[in-house]
Length: 116
Length: 113
Image 1 (cartoon, rainbow over the protein chains, first blue to last red):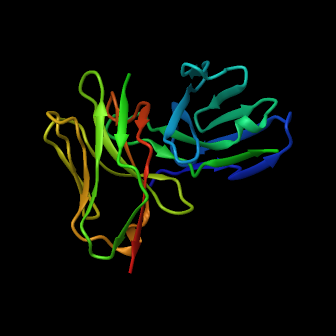
Image 2 (cartoon, rainbow over the protein chains, first blue to last red):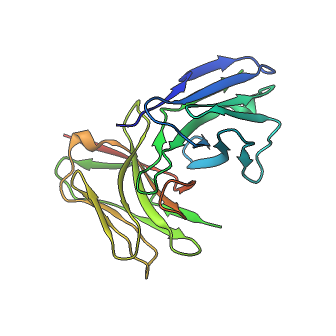
């Protein structure tokens, strides 16, 4: 079945560092990818919708200059957390849309980001 | 806006017990409803879905019925197994599931032998 690969699965870095997370659709073309954030014991919150070749659409309250999203090809979207601080520590999950209305989204395994 | 309220966990059951995880929603229009499952160390997987009122989604012995009158989509299984231990998420989408999803908080289920 369709697979979405997310990398890295875990990253620890110092405050002030920028961190890039990749989301790849391995065997299908994803016109749309979604980025979610999950706080401990809370639900997944949609951060932004990423469309190939155009600017991402951010949800209310999400800083677009803080969380840079690039969807340069039909199989790759990246989320860059710029100048990360401890409050950015979280679990980030991407999903990819196959483009067919009768098919579900496919999720990556998530990236645990810890900022020291 | 849209929201999903899900039974808080954790839930611990013995093998072969009956399972119910409650889920209610608030949405404008007629959303599609989903249950996703996240097994330890893995990503989210679609467990089942229902796209209109009175539809029943089912998979792997799990069932959930779209109840418009009570705005609910409770997950049930008649006899759980140890392998069902996972985190379960209820979710809704305005457009069939290929668009953005609104998730509940997730319920961690542990089945003991």
